[in-house]
Image (cartoon, rainbow, N blue to C red; front, top):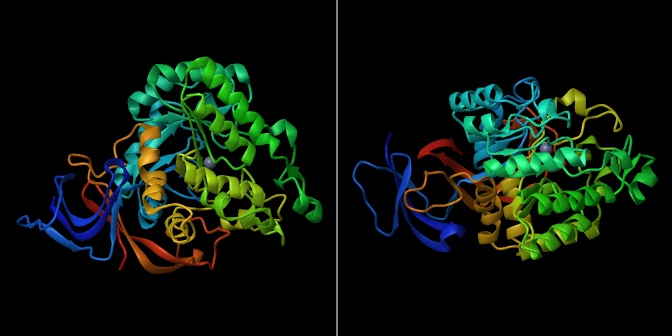
Length: 426
Ligand SMILES: [Zn+2]
């Protein structure tokens, strides 16, 4: 493989507290040097003046839909969409058909991802067999095959005793238990946040307590078992407060938030737009403010998209019947650069921590750093490049996004995995 010289980029790497203009040299799939005036012989030179080079971005919450739902997304289309969105790696949730609850499925996913040649895939195994919430999955054999965490995401583990055993078991392999925190008993048939808008629209509500009760229960079980708990797509002020308190007490609890929960509220549902139907549902201005505060003060550990592609026909049903979920891989970077970094809500350094270094640390995977010797996974960003969200040209098979037609500034222009460009913007 040809070596690569990234010339004149602003290099921002939170893991090494680097923020300076320099050259970066990549050889044999690894980062070899960051220095000024490098001119190694035979290297392909990328003129990166005006661009920002950062550790390859990692989306730790993605649904690739294969095996079983290839009409929604495949591993090939999902990893290509990830690369096009600036992600060098994604973690794939287990709710496929069959679910990823044993080594055979884990191996299948990795093999398909390897052949697809887009972003790296880190499989997440199911917490319970067939994701039924009853018996534990084969965590040991899945971890041996390459799984980096367990989660029944899409569903919470409802039985507290099963969750306790799952956490105890996960500590043996030192993997995080990623939990979709929801208390479904509270809201049969709920389709959106319970509040002013659900009343106006006559739609059944999901109370914000649904998430908070579940987070609090899981924090208590994490304390009981010593397990690493990671709260997926955290959306409410109360749940964030629960994570903040857990961290203050020194518990190994982490959380992620999605771009849509940081930028939209439940008034997006007005007009019964199914592009605003997701789980957890969009909530209120008060929650949104709290999440932005959590981004800035360090309570939030990662931004993840919960990329959940569905077929257009499914999303075009009426609000009650359309499935929950939207796509996110190709909008996340521009939304972050334009709506979080540009207005100064968080620094560029902090955003990269949330988009790369944080997820790598939580999942315990390589990446998230430009340290010499690390795999050459990096993303080049152009902070000035305009980006209009046009679902019709998405690489993902999914088209449903509440950000359609948004005009943003800043986007990923090149994604490099193991020293190989897997996406280059023309
Ligand atoms: Zn999800």
